Length: 427
Image 1: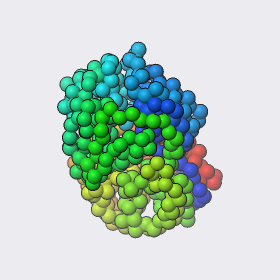
Image 2 (image 1 turned 120 degrees about the vertical axis):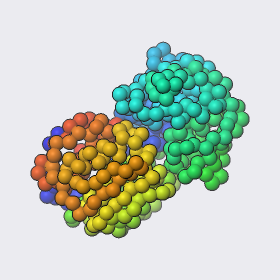
Image 3 (image 1 turned 180 degrees about the vertical axis):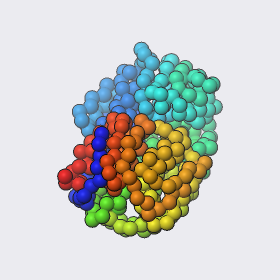
Image 4 (image 1 turned 90 degrees about the vertical axis):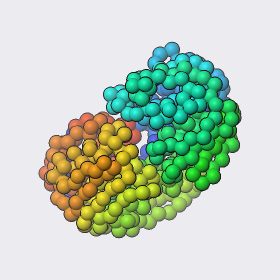
């Protein structure tokens, strides 16, 4: 795909797709609950469709029509053993969350994924689930897919994750739902809390006490109606685009403003951005609102600590923004980036270097020089949707022509990305 520098500012309003994390969880909880669940503004990206297919393979009735999904389920007690291994594609969220569910069900399941997912560590969820009594085996003693799960009666545990990961927390809590006793996860840093909110929306008794989350096992969930907020991780690409392209002013409508997800907004504020943020509604424990951003010159900053788990998926696009800020930007405490769809520290550095940028990787982040000129190049997305979108935004300010290979990777989270980008540029 050929991309060129824009001669037009970005302007107007944009409704990005539904939140990826919440879309996944809405399907999980709708399948686990008894009764009908109606989901609006569902993200129709490849990963979320993978979650639907996984539960359909266990006999759950799911009807999807565009961004609306209807789930009719008799609850997790009615799930049937899949006839075939479950293909998880590229979806790490599906993989880690479904381990918690399958570990407590009375049948055998095999999970596999694509080349990228097969290299992502699953033991961070499998180890605490084994403490609960799960039988999980696979490559390198169950560290990597493919995995085989022989469902067991689970017992509650109290668990403190070593990594700052909402997927790990959620996988253990979902195992706790099917376990005997009260399961507690105690985090060192608050990660996104969509799972806790979803438990409450479906009628479960979940307790949140500071950094500790507890779920009583063997509870019954009840189907409900869910409106998925629009994904701030997707909105981040247009927020950064507006900050990069002179004369731009863009409003992202109905975006999820959950405090555990707004690290990108705080990061650009640290760099000097002035944002107009208006909360418009609260639905199912989630805050929704509008974010308006205009072009501004920014200054480099140190991005570290508790802000990182709140913006882990937005670091690639923030790195691009840092190349144009005045001064140096340092990103720390982001070692979790090495375990995403790619090693995102190495892939971000390699990609921006192809545009002629000066930056270097560190074990837990990167150091980025500012006020740089980008030059178009032939670049690959590494099969990573967020790298692909970062390349597209970089092309808006890069001199010459940019060629993006493997643009299909963007379909994982944002199938209409280029359509929305063109609408904002008004070409």
